Image (cartoon, rainbow, N blue to C red; front, side, top):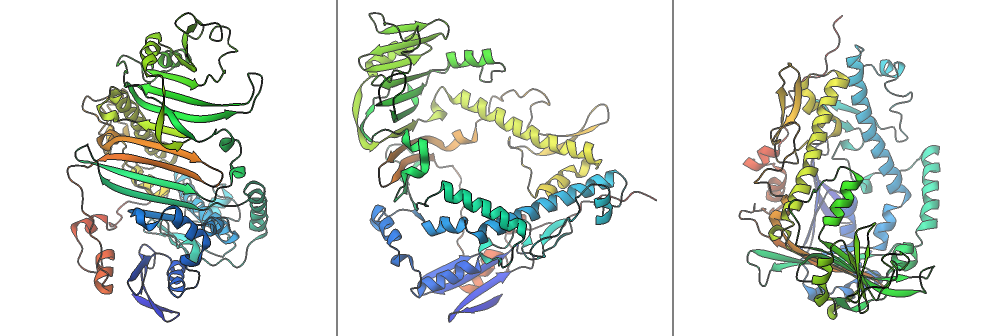
Length: 558
């Protein structure tokens, strides 16, 4: 631990040579800051002395009028215009490009060494790798004269530290740039200037409390606003939104997912410019026999036909009027039918609704009404509790198949490394994690293991797979989302001065939640608790780096 004197303030600094642990700690009156960036610690000191404090910013004061302290938000986030400008600055962009190239070169060199070892070449000699085309000429030459290498299979950069724990960009010094970097950023600056006239600040407020009617459920309310808001920067996307509406289309009791939007159309061949209210819903009527993963275009069309959904507009938007079948004169009950599409259209008062099932439209008739809304909005999304709906099986199936595909993709990588680089199957997992600097986790909750086939060939697979080839949904499988998700609502509002998103998320508390122990702000005890300087707990022992016993690729025998 060391101390840095900055403007009369002591900044405590604790770190390891590889940057795995890097923390600055500074105190001003009753305010404490723990950060990984020295620049941030210095700004904390500057602000405490009144230099560049948020309280002096008109933009921040305006943001606080939109979300005052009286809201008592659990989390308040303010992203200023200067924050976004900093992300696009030459210092940030060039350093970000440099560190991305460092990481790419680390992966390239490791892959080149594996390939050279498989070819029987000296993989430790860079000249051999260059001469045989495994890496390009000039490899490793950098504008900042940094270098990198691996110690016990842990890659690190000479000025940035260990991969995955690089020094924050704000703390990096960029004084000179190459001609290539200069030309690269000049092009980016032109793009920014042509496409981003200004950067709007963003404010986010989050608050959580117990649900009024649902037991063991918490409701998380969130508000996000971009203000002041420049609509011209967002092009056609914002131009599609119509006026803010004080009303909404009443939902059917069967709706489990519903979406409503106020849209505008600027004329064309159909009709003159107009505003209309678009609404769509998926109902809680999923047939378990529906094929949820169609393998052909015809099966996809059949799946859409069997999906319990409808789409409508109020007043009639006129998009379907040009179709001969659906645009014709409706019968006495308001229906038209397209045999080609198998699609029914209901024109009822000022409503126009389409669905593949006439009975669904008939059941929807009593619910078609315009009712007042609690808050004005242009887009409304409502999702019910999928875990207790008939869509539960569909959600479980979709999640399981995607997780299955992700799990298979990881094992394909492991088996490909064995085939392409000739490494032993036993070390393929360690090599893959070292190459990508990640921990490969089975998305089905299992563990990757090495299996030996009858032929004697060894392949990687997950012990959570029911079989090697058939991803049948286990009877007791539940999508992780359904274990806690109990509903959500989102409302979007755009005005001339701001863009706002308001909504809530209902979360069921799990039976056993791990407790997070906050560190003490006593300097020695606090750093000891946070960074394991003192006695290690069982949890900290679990997270500590373990000795690497993985053998490195052997050089060919001479």
